[in-house]
Image (tube, rainbow, N blue to C red; front, side):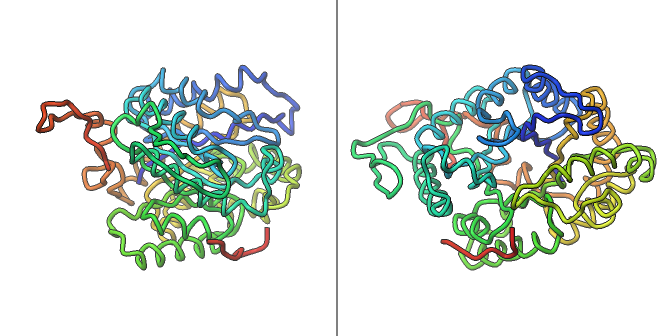
Length: 386
């Protein structure tokens, strides 16, 4: 299994102590966490995107650019790029720039987002969220894979003149994942294109996410895509990872913070049924406990999901030094055991994108002697109530 650290950059008071860091400090913590994650051997670092609520992740490209400048190996991802509210031309330009700055380390994770207030902010209707996502993704794919693109659609002015976005990606189109949390639609879109799926696995019982994963796999097969390249990522529950020597000690230390945050999270679609720490540890996706407890939980989810990439999020209301201690314990005490028990071909030679970034930007000479870059070249029902 591979491992990702995700920060959607919430900017919240610690609900127990009332402490909160400045905006500048919080953003710098994100960059420093990514740098430390690379040192500890994590495979990727993801930055979220929100345009409403208590978040400061409205400009993930700026944050990823800062991370690209202080890292060399770790892959850079999003979690998610809210493509439904964005212009695909600008997305193609901005993230190709990140791809160039990082020399081919970018992989995008797209979705329609779960913050309903984002749509009126951008002058869009929530009723169109899925159609917006599907149309804009189709255009983004073309912009990264083709030059001289002409296009017309419902939600954006047509590209009447042949358009080639610049900069081009570092070595062909970066891989695009699809984030999935509540409906079959994102899973179906990923399967239609043969793309990997990232299940939120955040606040609902595991069985709800399994419905989406099963639908993705069925549709992926129906569309005739190579099953060897059917990759799946999984989140780790709202609230953040917390590790202590014993599960009882982890619950004692982190329980009051988890429960206070859960009480305060009174937003439709974001309410967890796991209201107390005992319930969250016993049955929810939260990775809270001893190293052995966390290992067992990840592997129990792997037995059900068969996922290749495990994402974790740190409890960002805690003191930063404590967050980094948790990150280090996770890397040293949990990752090796899970890797050994759950191997994957993701980002390995058998993966079509496994050569990115190591062999990205390779050049070849065509018959005319020109040096060129090698390129890699519906609406559905809710499965449960928000």
